[in-house]
Length: 193
Image (cartoon, rainbow, N blue to C red; front, top):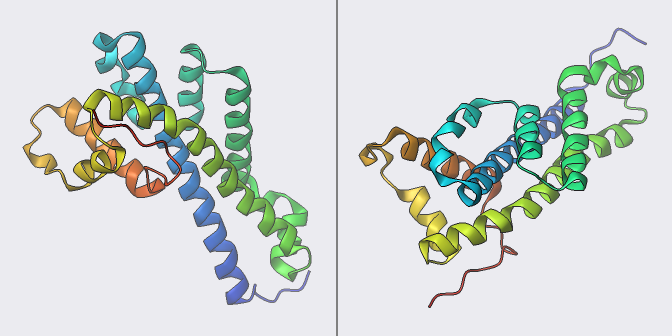
């Protein structure tokens, strides 16, 4: 390979794609955390405080907890596949000589970019699969449409929430809404009485 630098526009395109993949993976982590909380609320709400330790865990640990909670094996395997791909992107992207060559020369860059963008697509698909479960339960519990729930969380003055667990849960929910645009347009809307 030549010793010339990667053209700035190519570097910018690659950096943006990687950034989008990382943001999508972060949104998936929030969705996994939300699913852990949802399952715990169904199984035993009294133990919800025990889940605080998961608020800052890596996605692999979140998936392990979901497996313990009985997540469907096929869904768990799909999540695991996306997490492995994300890890290769973050931790070993330039260790692959084909990737390094594509970035450096531009040859084969389209395939590399498609692979990076697939992480975003796969994360979005998994989030869309997990969201309706969580969203429907939240709407049912609160007895209000999901759009109203999202707006209330986004505009709540969290400094007035005295319970640290409730404040942390609202902060997590706010982050998920901001990262994913939840509730998604195709998320089932709750019915008002």
